[in-house]
Image 1 (cartoon, rainbow, N blue to C red):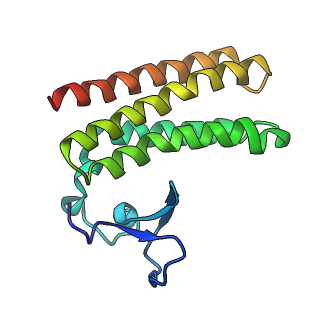
Image 2 (image 1 turned 30 degrees about the vertical axis):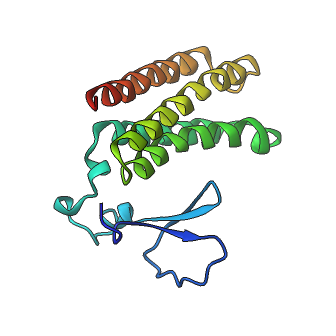
Length: 162
């Protein structure tokens, strides 16, 4: 993957960012991911970055969107606790796939394992959300099933890279 697609910029650096850059802070580094260019009509589908073509990446994005949607209904006093943790864990799934894809095969597999770990992190949060009455049993079961399917997809990708 070329540097023009994904580059790391040190926090507090003097690098000017153009308006098309979309910064994401992960582990103290700013990652400028140009993947949203297609959304804004700047990048054609044939110019997609390799990780964007992965089915598991698309599933991870959909999962994250679901989590953001259901956590909008969580109480405001949970904003810095359960809501934030759930959103971070769900977002970490796709972010780790994207970040790891620019590295070696071995490192990518490690990032995929981190993605799977983030999926597993969502499971107890679902239980806590249901127990506290923030989501219904039906919603918990649906999101739990999505967690299972996403974890299986990530595992399949890891196993396919042997």
